[in-house]
Image (cartoon, rainbow, N blue to C red; front, side, top):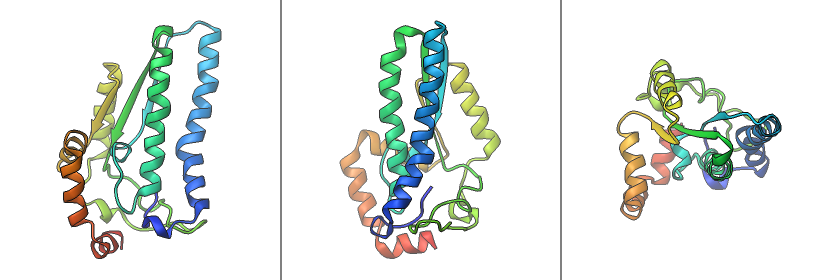
Length: 183
């Protein structure tokens, strides 16, 4: 994850986050798929994305973009591999209580954000998230959003009434509020 405004990012951070969140997963999936195809196996690929993969959010631009990329890659794979017996489940989770803030990138290459999880005080418990993910996987759902309110409502608003939702977000996402939120 990244925590910095769009203009604060060094392009090296963008590339590093894409290497971690996108290209490693895409490469591993291609290796597994070739094996499954060669051996005529059926399979189920589960991608751990984020609700930020559904829309852009201030101070998380690179993270959101990397999760958007997963949706592009794996939606295409879902359609390409359907008749070969391969299922794809995209899990859009968040916010979930974890060490993600501590391990997040800042905008500078090689620098960790290093904060505490207080950034998302209202987060889903990790166990609850894992249970909901297991249910989605067992039922071979194509896509599922695993989140608590108000985050889940925001996902639906951004998906079904994007213009209004963006106008509301722009009014609340002032530079001062973003810096306070980040700090």
